[in-house]
Length: 163
Ligand code: NI
Image (cartoon, rainbow, N blue to C red; front, side, top):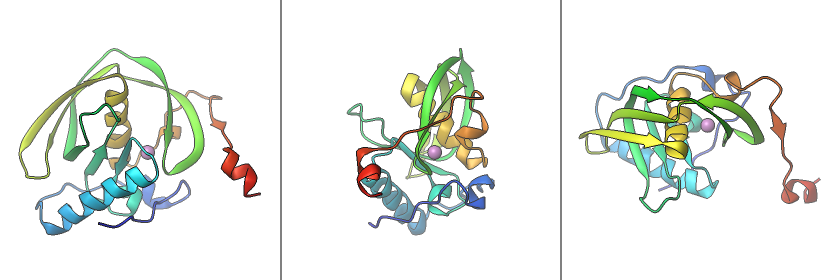
């Protein structure tokens, strides 16, 4: 496994649509393992392949609820319910947070890493993370959808020290 380089906000690749995975081959398995390692390294709750420069419809999520990582290939939102205001950030937009509206609940269909069809019914943070990562696969980032005027830049102690 290896930590891959993240792509950041000004990188045009983040605006591109990712392609469906047709063969879940060895390369995809390595990509998944690297994405998991990269997500954990940077303390993210989710990561899409495009964020490590690969335009394939693969996402990983771990909301740290003890159920372990979720790995989804070719995920599709098939149902949403409700809407609420949430705060959101993204590993490609370090130290930036904004408010946006997301569904309260979603149903997502996808393939797991073995090619088995899975359905995930999610609410709250998991629903939010699924929407966020699936948006990435369509070239959409959270600031595209934010409620105007809610973007905040938060400097960490670490950033201040490094100045
Ligand atoms: Ni993101």
